[in-house]
Length: 153
Image 1 (cartoon, rainbow, N blue to C red):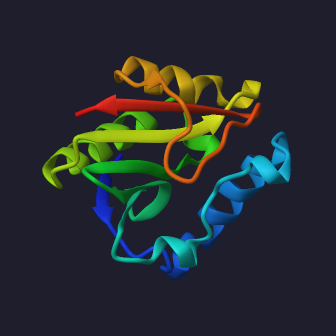
Image 2 (image 1 turned 180 degrees about the vertical axis):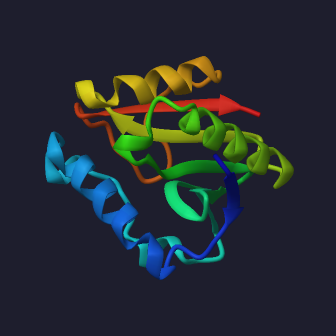
């Protein structure tokens, strides 16, 4: 296992399948109006740091940090391919995103995730890393299909 995590351009050609599977999973049990994934084009801006985990050169996970201003950032598009889960990649990627956020000078890191059973593992990971539930932030509004979490860095 040769794992790397690097900042990359989300428009990389070999990332299409990762984005397609992420989008499909988000839409599988969440109403469309409650899906907050960003298309890869929207992730390719200066305010977003996008990272890819690769195993022997193959993309297996992704995640991003979006600058919200006022020393506040958001975790976006965090996804690990289903067949790669159970290896600790989510924790490794989240810790990398946390380190990046701290190094970039952010004081708060927040996220939106789902309430559905498919998001239980993600919510547990975030809680283990110190995130706590919070009200909607940024442009989000209260949504019965969303859980908002935050962490002071």
